[in-house]
Image (tube, rainbow over all chains, first blue to last red):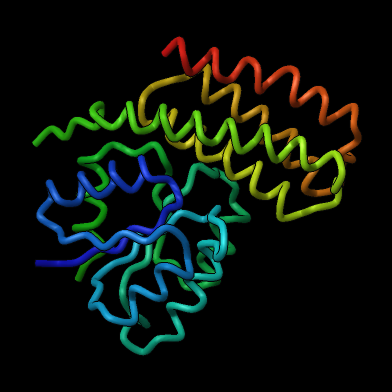
Length: 120
Length: 106
């Protein structure tokens, strides 16, 4: 079973994304912010990361930069979950190493379709 | 397969109530520390979080309202506008009074 890490400071968002992913047959690891994600990545094998951008402690862009430094995560897909339509934010994320982005709110079925596309 | 996320609405509403309380406390603190960037970021994140969740539950007026609130807070974050007592009063009197009403009505 493939494992997806969700990084979002919102409990309800983690619940909704987590539920969607479990319905899609994924195993889910939840993290509250970037630092929490880095801590949890240390002991886990993750196939894909879905991360929010605006978070306390460590934001999504900093998380992506840190994750890309890890050899095991160099080529794994990282998708930004964002309500921001700002091109500058997307460019920042891409420059940090994000594979792409999903705009919130998203259709749950479309989220699963997107994951199927980016997962090798 | 149709995935229904409506069962998470209650969690969203409870979480939003917490965010509103945090914003109110944050704005009151901001009076004595108007240049506290991290505090402004935290208030902004609360508004942003409510907007993000509102979108999933089709709460259109809440999305528009929190978006306007975000725009105002962004102007404070970017120092385009100063967090004077007057501005903080407006934020405290207007949006934070209206926001719980909007959430109660959903």
